[in-house]
Length: 460
Image 1 (spheres, rainbow, N blue to C red):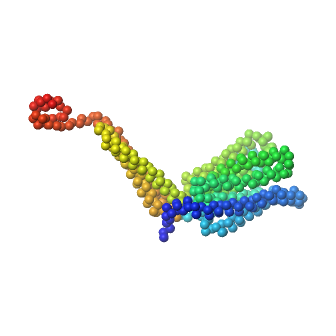
Image 2: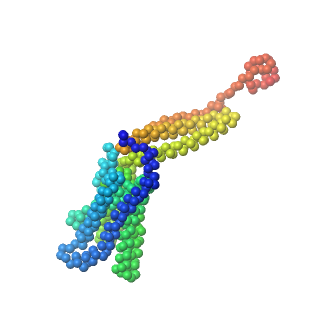
Image 3: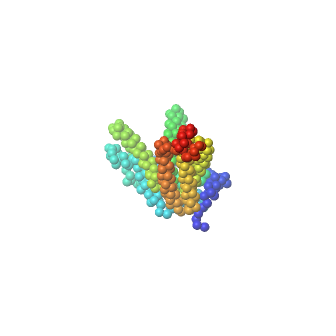
């Protein structure tokens, strides 16, 4: 055993109904593990916790409501992380840490691992920071970072990034990709990611109407539902970028940091003083709009950079890409074979020399293309044979390099055939084809188109 895995067995295993149900069950269990505590905490926030804040805690000396809410949310995120650890403890044999991107991928000398550090995640969502440094608007920050409460808020953002990324871009993505594949799994996972935020808006809207059961309470509830529609679209879009980002690099830590600092930059840099809208309205609006745009742009840019420069391919991805190349080329070869057969039939029935030459050239071009595709398929077969769990990137890079060289060789050959094809009609027009026959009277050789014999003068 050299670590090789059969491509055919891997491809059939992915679509087997017997394999799908356990992965689907894991997805459902993962959602329940996350959704249960979330709804419980939301209900506690709007009932018991809110009652204690307004009727008990606020009368205590040195009570800080923001500090209390931050600590409460930190406790919830820690509970979510502990539940996640319990979940993977019972499922570690099936959904490994490498599958979830928590540990380094099984690829030697991975540039993706080196670049996917905290710095990459830090700058992936740093649009507001860039705008602030570049323009230095006279707008005060939302809060001073160097206070105990605000440092705890930074810790909270990091815990949110860890818990949500571990659940969605880690555990759920690892299992859903085995059902839907790497193309549709990001969409599925981020529909769930957006849906998990619905209880926050719905429970908030319900309690807004319970607090004020009148037209104003109803308007507040409707406003929260409108916020939900807008927010879910943004959550889905950001989640999709983070999923592709994580999948390109095969580790989750860069997307964890990008998620954490996305929340952090928005909370830290958006001015909280609404009076600024009246004193410096243009600067306020410009900073807010450009900051939002730049934050999305830096996230998108990090995703593009990860996909173009630092992309790390897994064994399954390389296997899929090679199989897909073979499938497409096989269809092209079949079409070319049919076309060649049709042209050969036409050539057999053609009487004019020019048409026959033209058809022969077309057949040669198609045969060269068919041979090109067959060579690439042969190269793909060799790549499949060399593919193992640890050399996926090297094998795919070698496969693409060989494919490029094969294409270059055959494209030159096809080009030379085309050049000859264009020159041939001119040569045919210029050359004089002379056919020889014998005179029936004297037996001397004469031109077939001659009207009189040059030797005996017989009228032909």
